[in-house]
Length: 251
Image (cartoon, one colour):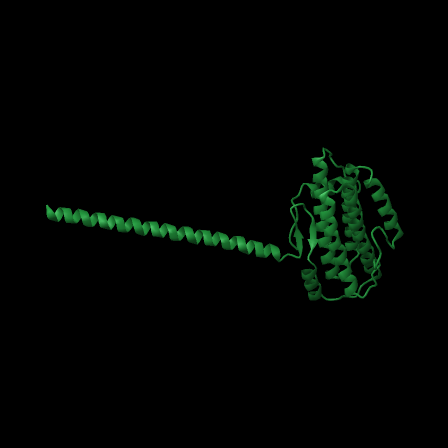
C-alpha cells in the first residue's frame, strides 16, 4: 500500500515538473516571438527613415535634402545640353510656383492641405536647385519673393491660379489639382529631353512621384467636399491610373 502511494506521489511530481517545463517553454517562445515582431517593426521604421522621399499622412511628399545630396554626389556629372539646362531653370521656378500658390491659398482659406504641400514643394524646388548648383547654373529664383518669377509664362500662370483660387475653397482645391497635373506633364516633357544624365532623371522621377501623391491628396479633399474632380490637363487614362493607385513612397 505504501509503495503504491509513493508511486502515485512520484507520478504527480513528474506531471508537475512536466507542466512547469511546458509553461516555461511556451513563455520563452512567446517572448521570442514578441522580440522578433518588435525587431521587424524597428527594421521597417529604419528602412522607411532611410528613404530620400518621405510621405506624411496627408500625402504631402518631401525630398530629404541630405540624402538627395548623397545620391547626387554618387552620380557622375555628364555634359549637360541646352535643353536640359533650360528644363532645370524652368522646373526650378515651376516648383516654386506650386509652393507660392499654396502659401497664398493657405493664407486665404487656412486649410492644412495647402500648408503641408507648400512645405513639400519647398523641398521640391530645393531639389532642382541642388542640380543647378551641381552644374554651376545661375539660379533664376535668387531673392525673388512669393509670386515673383523670371519666366513670364509662369508669372501669368501664377497670377491666374491665385485669382481663381481666391474665389472659393472648392476653386482653391481645384487649382491645387490643376497645378499637380501641369507639373506631372512638364516633368514628363523635361525628362524626355534628358540624354544620359542619371542625376537629373533621378530628381525628376522623385518630383513626379510627389506630384502624383499631391494630386491624389487634392482629389481626395475635393471628394470630401462632395466634388468629383475631372482632369483639366492630363489624359483621362493617365489621370485615372494615378488617382486609382496607392500613395507612392520610397526613393
